[in-house]
Image (tube, rainbow, N blue to C red; front, side, top):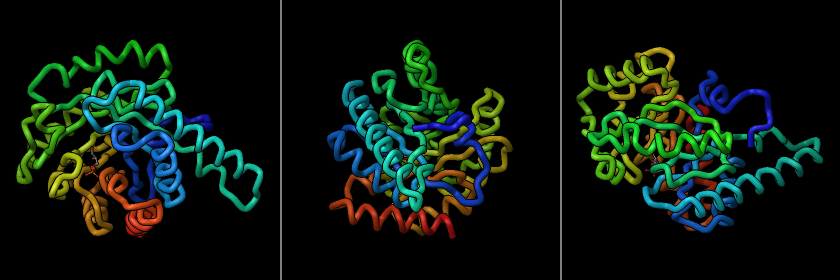
Amino acid sequence: MRRTDSTTLEYVTSSSQNTRHITLIDPAKQDPNTAANRAMVAVECGSSMIFVGGSTDTPDEIVHATCKAIQEAFELRAFASSQDPSSEEEQWHIPVVLFPGGAHALSPAADAITFMMLMNSSIRRFLVGEQIRGAPYLEKFGVEALPTGYLVCAPGGRVGEVGQAELIQPDQTEQVYSYALTARMFGFKILYLEAGSGAESQVHPGLIEAARSVDNLTLLVGGGIRTPEQAVLASQAGADWVVTGTLTEDAADLEELRTRISSIVNALEG
Ligand code: 1GP
């Protein structure tokens, strides 16, 4: 729910003293009301952005209902905070951003979308095909596109399989450097290094460092990050943002979720 003069892209790419945290919510994994409750806990614990998406085959209606429920919950919390001088209203004005598996998983209720090229896909559909299908919809509904290069690294998980990605291996630092340069030369502002949701190992820090050596790209890193130590490893290697998804989905309840996200955000804040 962006209510400031700045765009979501400015918010995402603005410099920050610490690596910031994104909570990814997969609409396929819970009902919209539960998603909104989880998103509120995430914001209370210091997540700075909510991504909605992840699965490859979730229909529009479910994605939209989830975005809408989260936005409505944030609006209520922002209003409540505005009535309470001791409370921080600004906290609730964080973007809800689509992280789509394709052109089917869109919603006009989102503030923005990671408009991605899966750069190491070997099939046209994920390089430009889904994007061509989705672009007129985004234009019509005024959802801001965040130009993003998406690079799937080993082990890669389901997104690596579905996207038929030529996975970047841990020692392929020069390859990542070339991809990062290419992303910048295409005009992408964001590069997302992905190990795959639920991955057994996170993106190798050497790959993050190689991407970091290219200026003027905001680096998102996700996949397989479950502990504060793993988040700090990604941060120290150069991630501007750390994304976690699975740890939200498999938390037993909202209190466990609170403990998990707080420990990661606190570790990133040093
Ligand atoms: C997946 O990078 C995200 O696209 C998050 O991964 O579910 O492993 O946290 P996890």
